[in-house]
Image (tube, rainbow, N blue to C red):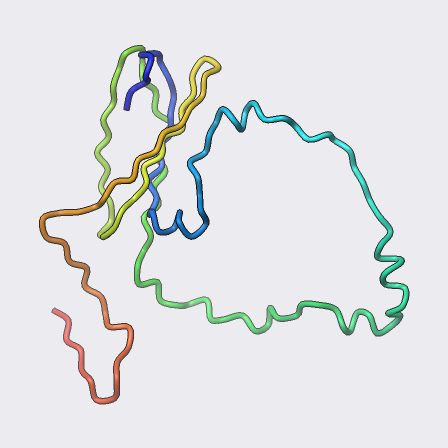
Length: 157
């Protein structure tokens, strides 16, 4: 990692499973846009719609309210067969003209990860990203079958 104009900077490094990021269409944060965005006008508002819209429900209103499905929560002890790769490292600092290399050990994983760098220094901010395939010469990921039929047997070494 180095700075394009050879200036010093401080940066953070994030390595995240590309599949997770695709689920939410996550974009690499752009620090410049965040720090120099327009601020919303600090006006507080309120309304009385609950007095108007709720006027005809009377005593039966709370009985017909939306929600109450929390008691039907699915079991929270579901098996997590594939642990996602999410690593956040830093902050790191580099001096003028310096380049840094990072070696990072990932858990057993097959797929691709997005490496994101968000940096800043002396009022300048920036970000970069790169998709990296996680691969070796031979990769195996042993898992149990998702479905077994009656009378079927499974043997794992």
